[in-house]
Length: 173
Image (cartoon, rainbow, N blue to C red; front, side, top):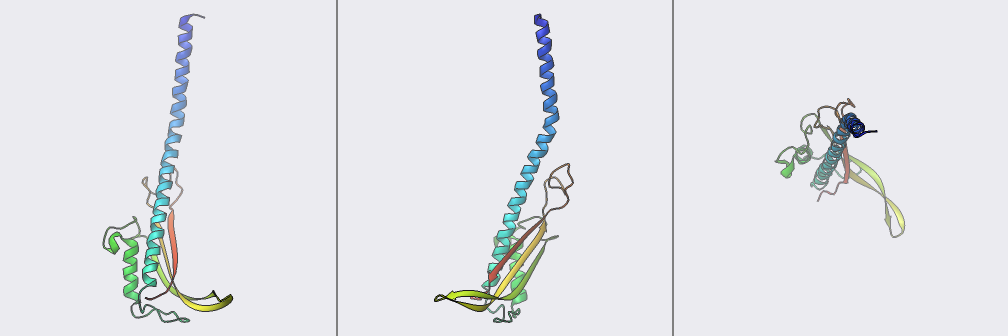
């Protein structure tokens, strides 16, 4: 084998590596975008969960918001308190700033409910059942992807909804 033959063989090998790279590059790009979008979805889910927990905690500490157990009906200040809690969930800066998640103020839904539960409490070694009022808050919002409607670009996986739910015992300080 001569020197020119070896060079021709090396040239063919470098062409094969370029072809392999060209075949794998789109798959690697899709995988990278998918991982980034999945990370964004987890971040937005965590943000939504914290916001819903904050709204439920706010309602749980509002005075005269609910009637005492076992009824736990909404009181006179229920509508105003729910409006303020919804603003706390939707926006930053104590409800006066920007929307914390895209889609939460438009397509998203936030529901509030007051209910009563019979909970077991241990007192001096014995179990006692007491009636308590519970505030339940749930928020559902669509995930807004960087690449449009799909979580992973080039694949139509459909819309993804983020859901968060929180319960707080009503204290009414």
